[in-house]
Length: 81
Image (cartoon, rainbow, N blue to C red):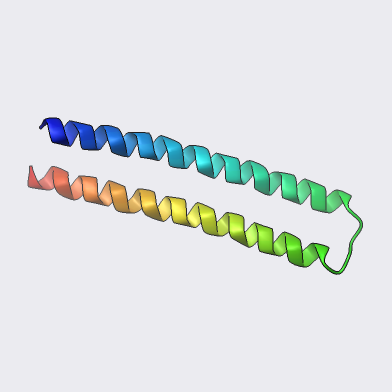
């Protein structure tokens, strides 16, 4: 039971960490959108912005996938005990 409580605590800590990372990525995403709208259009700017936006989206998906896997593992552990 102690191990289970520790696993819950670790999962909740990770969830908070990942939610913080997602929030940070979203802030960076908003800053990119704002800065791109204020810059004169160049041939490289839209490509760079799209690349950065896709990187942000990818990081968010990875965080959510990781959290989903960990929560699923915890639920399976809960069912076994």
